[in-house]
Length: 167
Image (tube, rainbow, N blue to C red; front, side):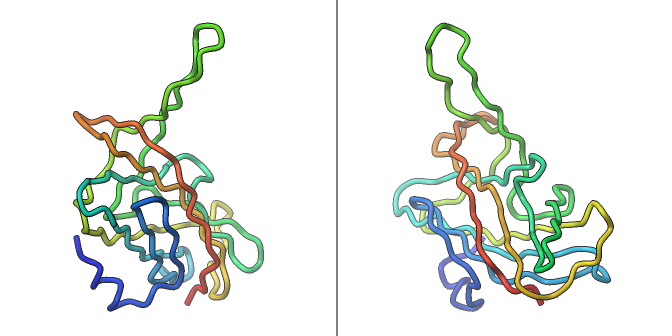
């Protein structure tokens, strides 16, 4: 975990805010002999009083890097660190016109007020294409909970999407 000074050391290439949660991308790199992209990012809790719990949506196509050639690289949920990748449980209504309940997650990491977490995510091509440097679109579904307790919490899905230059 870090503080806001962590972002001062690494100039952010992209920043998105979702309420009190701020996501900053520090770098996108071609790694592993061109077989993967490595995303280095930090998630901040800008609240001064309340913790938030965050995770990344592990569902297919909810975390992708699209390279400058238009090829997609999907999130490698087993080779990412710092913030857990988890599935979202969607609530459905069973009775008449009742609205569905909130989405839920069963894995998340707490970020204390004013604190941050440094994370990495790897992405790979299902067609075994080699990753190349250049402008890429990065998309991650960030799952944010304000009431995570006993291994479960309601969540809101916020999509981080930005163009980042891969090195």
